[in-house]
Image (cartoon, rainbow, N blue to C red):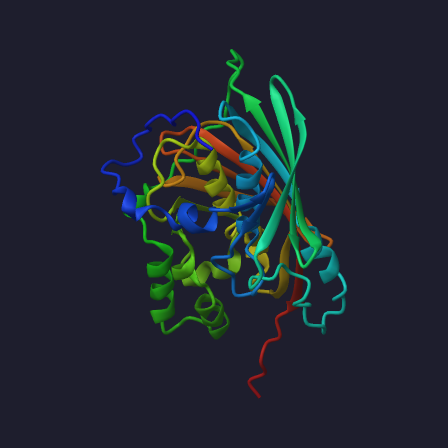
Length: 336
């Protein structure tokens, strides 16, 4: 699954040796071939919801699709639906009901990925991927590949001006600082303690994290620097796309809930669909700025959009996702 090398963009020097390779490459996205166009993926990290992490499913499906095309084509888009998780979870409708735990992908069971070679054309090729557990589809995906084609028509937005990652605290340090604050409200303390940042195989540095006294007035926007933990190297552009697919789902849908967390408690949040467009070569083991925003929420759904920027200002990836978000009103405890 190799491809032309990404250009160096000044994102860092002194890459670590190969024996420190990213666990995302050596474990999470290392699929076991079972037959032609049939693969098995293992589960590495599961959120506190005890469902499969959506980014893992997207990334592994992308790896399976990439194994069915030639090395001279590159990924340009994917569009996927989390079918089993969502539609069985719709059974839990009443606010007093607890969300069903049988609805989600099972983190204790490997996932099978079946690839269909839908179309192989001169310029574009399409692969369909179905992820299966317990004999039933939990996820479907269409991945499009393209032969490199130069074009005189080019433009992009400008990258936001933000502090570099070297000047920012990582998520673990930031959470520890919040938890040491004696004025932190208990509802925020409980939520912060549930964040398993140390278990995630990606590094995260939030940009301009809000102080404690502003947690109740947040906009549906957030930015953070992200990169895969460990070393991946330059050579395999497709693998970097698969790693970016994994990264893109982390904290993405939660952007839509940011303005409402002080008033409502999120009791159920799960992705409905996820789309990505790959614009330029990049290295997922180098820092990239992830710009996330939610232009709309309603009808128990939230829409989020994201952009992954290289440090040199090149727009590398665009993302979009819609998900189900169900909340309960926060009940203030009486002081009487």
